[in-house]
Amino acid sequence: QVQLVESGGGLVQAGGSLRLSCAASGRTFTNYYMGWFRQAPGQEREFVARVNWKSGSTYYADSVKGRFTISRDNAKNTVYLQMNSLKPEDTAVYYCAAAYPKTMGSGSVNEYDYWGQGTQVTVSS
Image (tube, rainbow, N blue to C red):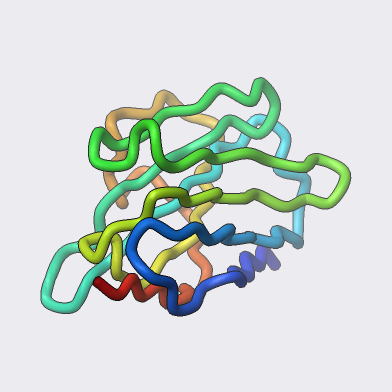
């Protein structure tokens, strides 16, 4: 049974940093895509970033490019999202997701097969 467990959320001032972690278990994730999404109150879940577990190739939403960095630690089966220069508009519940190996598009939620429970990130102004 696949489990994705996020941690690392919290309250931070604008301009600050947070690092989110996603511990993955239940299968071998080689060749999977691991993604981070976020959802603010009253809004749709939106793509943030993804990484290919095997190659390490990454892809980012324009809104976070240059501020956020996604990475993975194969030995720990953990994916990270380093968030710098945080803005109040980054406030949301952040979700980790995993996608079977497939041709990926630009970040639709429908591309992902497994989801974590989410972790709250609040950025105060």
